[in-house]
Image 1: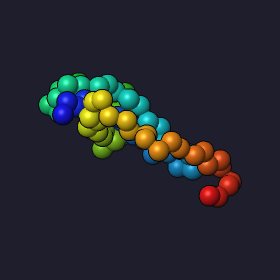
Image 2: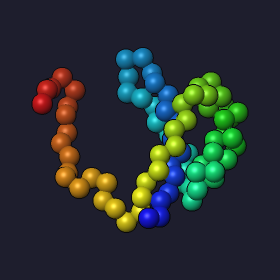
Image 3: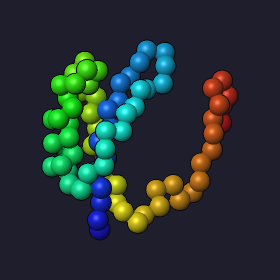
Image 4: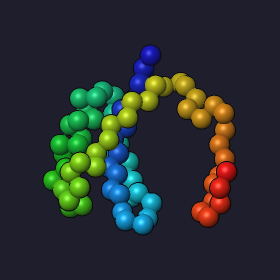
Amino acid sequence: MDSVFLVWHVHSLPDQEDDEKLIGAYRTKADAQDAIQRVKGKPGFRDVPDGFVVDEYPLNLDHWPDGYITVWPGTHR
């Protein structure tokens, strides 16, 4: 099955939602790792060097097949 590799940078902030940035989508895991090398020394990224995540996503596959619900702040399921 064909896949793409998504590179994210996630910065956890106190008392806030995580600050997530999609760096890009790449054909191979090696390409994804190369992207990290290109940006890891840039402002912001260099301050949180452990924030990089590579996720593999198969193509032509529904990733939310069962729908979703919204949970608003201050409410419980």
